[in-house]
Image 1 (tube, rainbow, N blue to C red):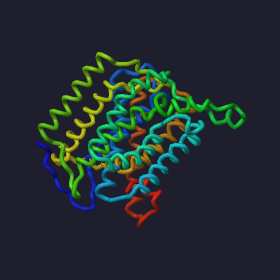
Image 2 (image 1 turned 90 degrees about the horizontal axis):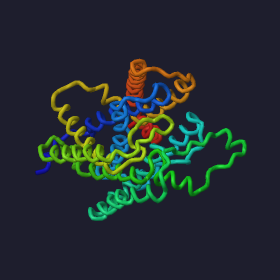
Image 3 (image 1 turned 135 degrees about the vertical axis):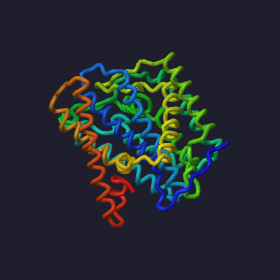
Image 4 (image 1 turned 60 degrees about the vertical axis):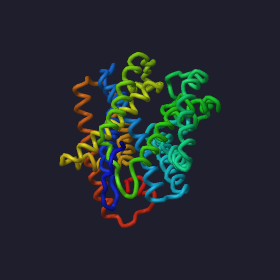
Length: 356
């Protein structure tokens, strides 16, 4: 038995996706604040919460390809242009916010930018081809981690010394960062985006949303989560903390990927159910509708305002600062929504940045 469809009206908006995007960007802000503010070590519960943000963000970016591909009928050029804009934003963040040489490793925006056209090509394949590609990435990942090695320290090359004549790393070192060693290397994170694309093609059909509130689907998602947690507990991996980032996926193990996949689907079930209860969740939905803009702005705030202060505070003070940051991001999201509603057919770049 498959979940029964729940039809919506045009203009199409999946409010559950908005909720989960809001959750992703909210958790990511907390995770990115840790290295610059919190006295380490971070408590385990905080490390777990931080580890949810990026996988969920990447998964949802893949889902949106399915929406644009199946329902809006966009061609390949759309995904290439959209992906290029996301990659350009990632490069500008490296240059202007972090002060490092761009493209030295595969950060999250680089991964998402690359995954958009690749997810489009993935959805053009038949089901057997999709399964083969997805499983190939998953199976090859541990072998590549062994072959290339995993240092747990992505390349962060300061820009000023390079401009003064310092040599860049060798090409094979940079390639290794993009394939397996960087913040979000193609192996295995591309598989997460592709799984999102496949999930989107299942969820969105004929201008409708297929609800995930279903007993059989819940058993499958819960089973994957429980199995992943048990395997991850038995084989946790090294869980490095590069540059003070405390997520538990450095490196991403197959056990972690199974766990996080089950959790993502469980979160979808919860989000779908919440929206049937009549709860007012507008602030979260608004925040999720412009997650890219919020991500860019929060990165500038942390890198240019928090990091130069060189503060280290205890957990309670960190949580207060985190809540202040979230409140500011929410106000920004409302401002962006007000702007978006006033714009009449804004340019493509603007739509990508502030949301459609």
